[in-house]
Length: 151
Image (cartoon, rainbow, N blue to C red; front, side, top):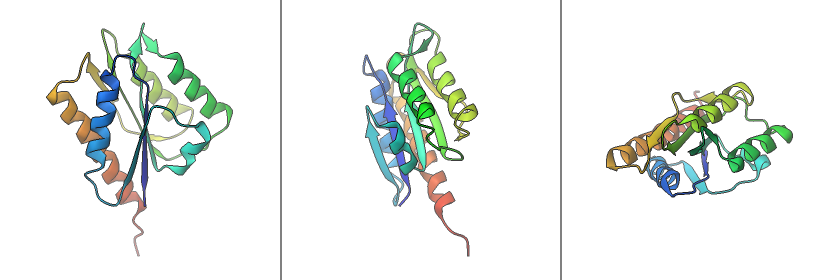
C-alpha cells in the first residue's frame, strides 16, 4: 500500500492545523496510508512514497528543527530520489521557509516536488484548510497512480 508521511513543526499551532487538514484530504483516497507526525527519524523516510514537510516561517527562515531535520536527512544520505515531495507552512509576513524546504527537496534530494509550496498567512481559515485538503488528496492520488502496475 502506498504511504504518505506528513511531518511538521508548529510553534503557534497554525502549521499543525494545515498538516491535519492535509492528512484529512489524503485519507479520502482509499488504499493510501497516511502518517502524520511532529517528528520522524531521517532514515525512515525511505519507507514512504511521498513526504510532505510543514515548515512555518520565523524571522524570514525555517526553524532550527526543520533545518536540522533536513541536514540529518542529507548527512545520513537518505535516498529520496524521485519520491513525491511537497512543502507547506504558515507565516506572518514573508513565507520563505516552505520555499526553502521545497528547494532542498528538489535540488539536494532530487525529489519530484509539487510547486508552488502551500503558504497560508497566519491562522488558516476554512478556505485555506480546503486548499490543504486538496493538496493531501492530490498527493495521495499521484502516489496511488504511480504505484499501479500497467500490464
